Length: 147
Image: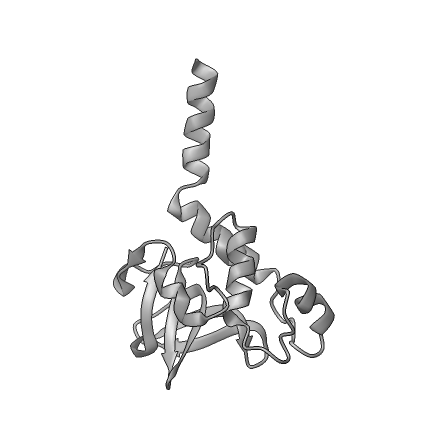
């Protein structure tokens, strides 16, 4: 009985939002620098699509979520679909590892929060200048934070 309680407590601790969010950031960072053309074969194998021909920020996030033990939204390839991922978090409570959806003009982009300041959110994501990299977005562009 004690063993069951111990294992249950360990599972709950490991699956807490903090641990899962940190896992998303760690997974995303493993692909940092990969370019949609120069590293096409590796990204194509990981994402299941050709990143040189398809907008792929959502596909990248789907892969990251699955590798971190999370279930991506049904239409994960569409950045806007991440508005329904996990639980909503106020921007003022955002922390590294949270999923952030930003609006750039008429389109959406999704990435994992790496750092936040008074004016910017630094995201790591796919399809940021054709690669997996850290990019800065204005806090005013943030549409949603999800955990």
